[in-house]
Each structure stands twice: as C-alpha cells, then as structure tokens.
Image (cartoon, rainbow, N blue to C red):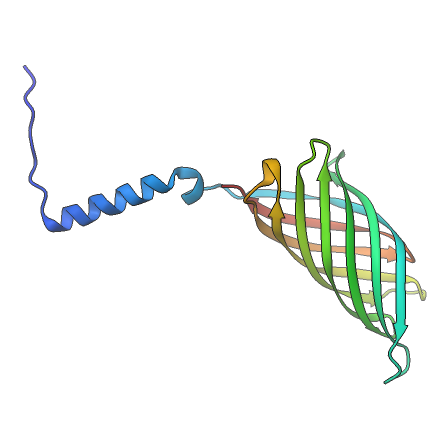
Amino acid sequence: MLTERVLPINRGSRWALAFVALIWGLGPASVWAAEVPESGRDVFHCSEENTIEIGDVADHFITVFVCEGMRFVGDSYVASFEFNGSGDYVAGAGREIGYQILTYSDGATRVLRFEGTRTPAGSDIDAVLEGTYEITKGTDRFSGIKGGGSYKGKSFGGNGYLDWTSRYSLP
C-alpha cells in the first residue's frame, strides 16, 4: 500500500519553489533556446550608387548604395537579398553602415544591420570589406530571432562577395 507523505514547506523552500515555477513558466525555448551557428557566402551586385564629394580633404566622398544578391549556405542557395547602405570614404577607405533584408523562398525574412570598413586592395575599384552585423528582425519562421555575426569579403567595382559567420536563436 502506498502512503502519501506531505513535506512541510518553509519560507526558503517557498521562494525556491516560486523561482522554479517562474523559470518553468517562461518555457524552455525562451530560457534555454539553443544558438544556431551558420556560415556561408553572399554574392552581390550594386545597382545604384550616389556619391557626393565633401571637399574638406582630397578624395573625401560620401556614398549611398543599393545592392542585390544571393545568399548561399554550403552549396545551397538559401535566400535573395537587398542591402542598402552608406559609406564615408577618404581615398577609397572608410566606414560603411546599412541594412540587409534577406527573403527566403517561403516568404520569411531576416533584417540585418551591418557596420564595417572598406579598405582599397590593389586597383581603384577593388576593396576588402569586413565588419559585423546584428539581426534586428525576422518574420514568419524567423519571428523573434536574435543574433549576429561577422563578415569579410571583396568588392570589384559594383560586384563582390562576403563570407560570413553568425549565431542566432529563436524563441
């Protein structure tokens, strides 16, 4: 025959029980969401570029650009994208900031905010690009996404590629 045993709960135990209930109530996904590592390559072409010469020092320009491309993870095409940004350059070197919107075949999206540098590499149009990004928003299967990563690549005039790595989690 089984007997029921009732254990007394003191004030300290009540707090511990309340804490466990709070953590359990948040759900494992929000407390223990696994980070997903990801890496790949973005290939792009810039279709618009508007440049304004500043005139304070030689070869100082501000540029606004629009680029489109494809994202690959491994050997697979994963998403199309557009990124819009601006750069502040002296002699072709400087800082860039902007946003990239990835659109997947099922309609889900991710929005990334990037910050990086452009460093001339050889000719007037070749450059090394590198920086970091934060995932600021996602829709559909990416709703609530959090994460970020880094990138490094090259541009050849209005074309280029970025090799990137990131980690993200979903609620």
